[in-house]
Image 1 (cartoon, protein in one colour):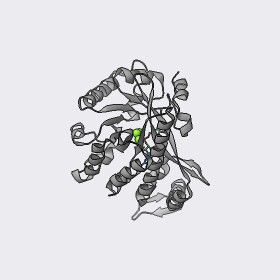
Image 2: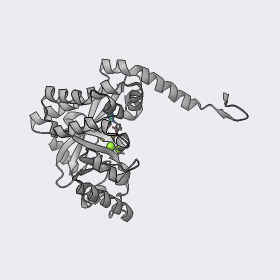
Image 3: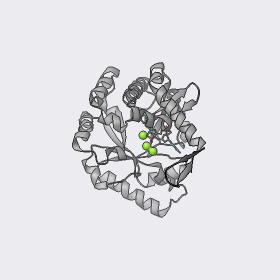
Image 4: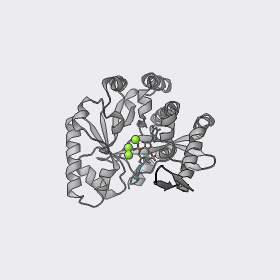
Length: 283
Ligand code: C2E
Ligand code: MG
Ligand code: MG
Ligand code: MG
């Protein structure tokens, strides 16, 4: 089947991309009922202190147990939920579940003490963000200092003061704000000063340059510079996507504070995240 695109230009329809579009549409339509039926679940990935290898917290990562397609990762449905606005109730559901889990860990004295939750740009634009967060923390009995909200660099680029206001309120309460996937977007370093963030999460692409030991000298210089700047602004640095011991060693040497990645543990169910299991994994 060829679609004419005007004049003498035409393109062949790509049956695969048609199929993807149909699936996307079907998934989008199915989202609200999926939330109601409880088809979403949260996996947790530990955040490890690079200095001593202890687990300091975990990041909550949402998944969809789709009855036909199996388990879908967030990249498959978060953009769809963003598009329709369902991300607001879905994001609230994740926040509530993650905060409840963090409180449970605190009670057992045998798990991560801090919880990181991803927040989409649309949730930031939604007027209920601060009230919902305060409400959930109070209801579940978690202190604000144990919560870290992750926003991507691109969500905050060009954000005006009105958009930053809810984040400032949360930061004043003691909630940490992390700049996720840092270094992937247009990184206006000077811009960092006006954002109420306390954590930089260095994108996985930087970790890749640390594959061999010693690390690639140019990548080293870049990470060294970012870490130096972050620390001078009182930000702590978390690195994503640490898959090997060599990467962990290089990033520790460069002064990064916290690490996350398959080298330590893949995202998994909350009961797999107890400190003892992780010490084994770190070896
Ligand atoms: P992110 O926040 O940057 O999360 C880190 C992603 O890297 C996760 O992918 C995680 O599974 C993956 N990862 C962790 N360690 C490694 C590693 O060592 N190597 C590699 N190759 N990957 C690693 P995941 O779970 O597929 O999540 C993808 C993105 O979806 C997240 O990126 C985040 O932006 C978004 N997301 C996940 N959960 C939520 C949520 O509840 N709300 C919103 N708004 N977004 C979410
Ligand atoms: Mg994140
Ligand atoms: Mg990230
Ligand atoms: Mg990332």
